[in-house]
Image (spheres, rainbow, N blue to C red):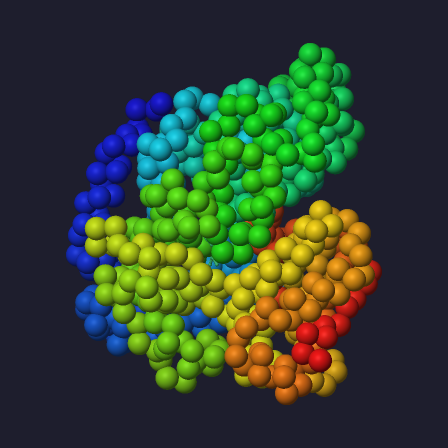
Length: 578
Ligand code: AMP
């Protein structure tokens, strides 16, 4: 292990920061406001050098990304002067923004790289206590997406790309013993299908040394192994002959792979035999990568639906849910690695940002965050109450002040004096027609209940999304499913009714009974539709690392809606309320 990394020291630091969370928060706010006091944005709100939380929250308003767009545009256009930060912003992150259908810019700087490394190292220190790994490699399904430059010369890329490109990332990964098995040219390749193929091939070449399998989000790990199921024979041919498949056309990737790919018929036979012996790919990971200590990635929130498939591939290999953060900045770290992924809790690191929390009951009176009339009251990090739900508000070192992140979390307790958060859902109501209010989580629960019925025909839902259809009166919910085989009409009809009946929100049930909302429609999609949606986002500049299937597709997201509607093979109308 590199000398720079000392697990016990990091744990001690974490303990002392969390013991003194209130003071650390005050110091952090003070530091952020002092460093950026010359910024046009902060000057406008007349803080006049005051940095106490009370003055801060009474002078500076709560904002959403939309409120900051004029400032972000100025930076993108290269308008001189300090706009949001004291030091000029030279890099943007593209937040995945898959719910709105287009990526959005958020400022990125070196401080955000540093806080990312602090989060990675802290969670590793705790994880390594519970699941020690020796010097090994990681099969990291990561992709450095494209960078481009704005009119004003600011570099823009996804947050993950910005982090992967930093020198600190490589150093940290080495220090925490999980350097990627794939060459850099694969990680930073221009075509993610080709990169994915080469990640898998690199994994097979180093299969005995792989200690960790990871990706930013769990869906990407599942996607990678679903791809493995399709290409494993080609991978074996490459191993046998030492010649990379002709599907890889990017010269830099071919050159880099040629350095590690040598003819190895013995290895090809071994992998071929193992794959052929698997039943329905159950236990694929431990069979092919026998030294894997755990599988790592964000597994909470909208990633929960992928856990079943991940467990199928993983068999007994533990799943470790990664930390909680966003392109806008990190928030909290998973220091309880022995909990199952569904129960993961995240402890807020009080020195990487200044955090406020809006109690959910305040939010429920404010249906649309973009049209707030009365500003909801927020509370400080150490004032939150166990058991209560809140929306997270972030102030960071990169020019975001009192920024509503749009996530709902529940306080699950405290680690010393820092709260432990459970991720609940994105705040935006995704399904609403009149008085009904259903969140991403409600949709997930309803899909889970209905998908259980499919198991009687040994089928599963590969992925799902939803849409509010206002094209006829009354409006209704449409749920799109991609299923991994052909289910009978009768069963799908039952699933459709179950979906409808599983939205238990009183507004929905009442509206359905009075026909103020029409019967739910289940539309079954042809195989590969969600792959087409992923390709669509990738073409638009998203990268696989941060891709999350949009759980609701709005009418304005025409591209995706078109893909969905053009690929419907069957549809069913609920009779649950007839
Ligand atoms: P991005 O826009 O790609 O930066 O994604 C950030 C969003 O991903 C957050 O605002 C959350 O909604 C979600 N997210 C990040 N970390 C987690 C986590 N550990 N559990 C659940 N959702 C998460």
